[in-house]
Length: 424
Image (cartoon, rainbow, N blue to C red; front, side, top):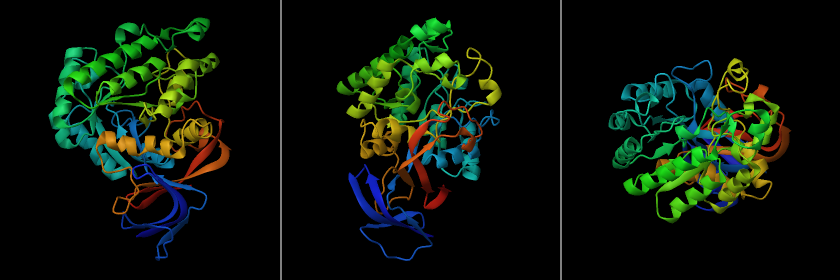
């Protein structure tokens, strides 16, 4: 199978290339990149006026299988990823049963092999059942091919146990992804603690709950030498702590989600539960600090924390509704509209945070459009304006805060291993 992509703006952060090029894909691999290619192909894509980038890599998704297939499955999640331009995703372990054993890792991998249309990597849990009491068999899960460990959705509160997990991860050469939250500072909070929570009479989540664990885990990473990745940073101080960790030589990276660089806790005045996520939406000053952290390169990655929930669950009221929103199909347009169009990031810088940087964190040979590489490619129209319509989502769940939002930037094609898996 040959695919010829003609006349697109090739943006490839790993080589710094940003030029109009033709690309020839043959049998799943990038065979040729040149100013003009005239080879015959089974499919020719006119990419004039479009961006051609490495396939996006999402370090942080919840596909809910096994256990919560009514919210999302590996099949539907992968279709949502493809529509959003993502060619590789990392599935978090808070399933039922938890991904805490070689058997469950293998189940997810087998199901992905059978049903997924994108590359699905598996994150194993740090502790059994995400209970924070006993380490999972990390070595066994590593043999089955996990890409990282995390107790995402929860935080290992016991610092000694967390350090032990980090030691094992370092020895196995896999990163630790951390959800940062001190349980002792939560107090049943459902939104950011501040003026808005007081006004609404809702229990608040202190920013200190996040910041304390970011600081602790940076200290533990400094001592163990593990590759630490901080998930979904939402506070200005969190950005500063990440910068501090980098400055003192800790192997630490960080991600932010589109909702945290776009929305503030003022949205919660509507009491729409699609604005309920964890970490919560913070203050305007935090949003600005996150954008500055992205611009300065302190924050390495944009991830989605794609967290599908059934409509009935989200309709339960603000206190009872679960945390989380879907994000795979809105990440690109929100990032183009809020970051590129407003001058916070160049196209190259944005694509780096969606492709090259996540690939480096995982230690995988992806996020690069060069001759001889696997053809994971995303083709983007960065200019067309439209409104996000959650009824058009292919995810099983529609819990998005971005319905009807005016945006620019949409995915035209997603190519995985040389196969077109999405064509708008």
